[in-house]
Length: 382
Image 1 (cartoon, helix red, strand yellow):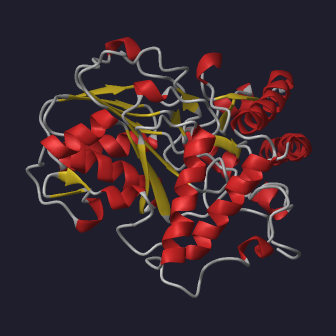
Image 2 (cartoon, helix red, strand yellow):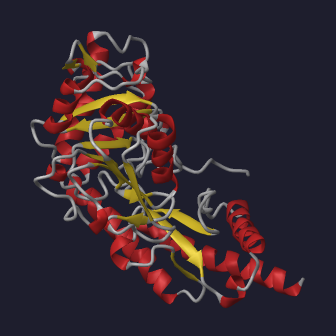
């Protein structure tokens, strides 16, 4: 492809509007992350994230290794075991957490509450006196929990929430969540590598009263001598962070603050999703993978193809059609990485988080129609 590269971050998620490499020129690349200035930069990420998210004062927030995956793994390995577990799975990442709990940690009292792609499990089945593990937004299925009303306020168990593509896009009910994990690259368009871990006082109490039966890797250790390691929540990271990625995270936070803070960020996501809804409503061939309107993600929007010509094809041919569409879009530099996740039904996935401009989505829709019509015509003529 000739010309400039698309303004993508990791994920793939768009960088914030107006981003350039100059945003990183103040990065503290010449000093240790353990120096006083280095710790101050890391703490600034934590403090500004806390304010934007509206975290309760007694919740802790820390930077941990290995993106959101590392953060949720850290929480599961450190906290699960003393109670039975209800774990929800309706897309790829939730199913990975099921594997970790049942096959790696080998916990026995586990109830897996599942649903197919496009569906949400029956939340009424969840017993909040057990520990509960779930994704707020199913990134690979485009299915999101509608709210936190199903989580008991007087629960005895902990709620562990993988919220990586929901944080900043949805106002989260912090009083219902004991562990929340996310990564910089999703709604805010930062770089990957680092995860964010948020703990309620109830989660901290579990850390200080329970010792897992399995060996704990260094990267997962959050306690010492039976007490939580407070340095982790003031910028003293377990491993060496990238100060370039830290600077990029600070740039994203500055942008979010400048446009109006959390209401503005959520509002951009809502506006983007409304544009997609309007296009889908008029489309003769595309529909949301999520069957219920209340559970349709406004960030990771997953689309299925409902044209009878397509649905009559064999599964392998359906997958081939979707891949051809994605290749055409990329060849024309109209969209990149727009295919459905590898485990999901054949279709498209559009990222519509806060860093995406609505005008760019509106410019994309005719290209989607063109790509589908082109592939259909070519295959029908063959």
